[in-house]
Image (tube, rainbow, N blue to C red):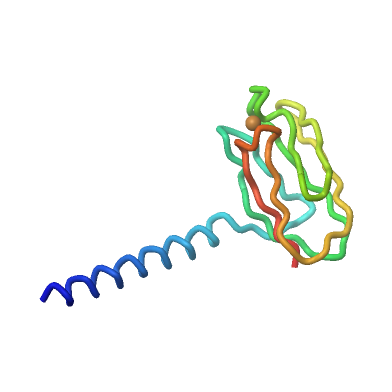
Length: 119
Ligand SMILES: [Cu+2]
């Protein structure tokens, strides 16, 4: 009996992990367009998971609505690119053509976190 309970428990955990993983990807993921705006507010980038085309120069648009210094810069550590964001304005950030892969972006203290997925 307890074995059955354990198996059921494991299956339940697996189902929950699976569901959250899928749901997270679905909610967070957004396809890049040249009009996509990334909202910078309340400690999160929205969207915080963006699919972008590899091998093309792209321009990201950050709309910063958080006046706190925390949100002032967006930093792409792997690309050695950072940009100061203006409050209540849209700041454009040009990126070079990317190879396939994942490129995290953060504020300078790494409290805001997002991910570009080039593919
Ligand atoms: Cu910060």
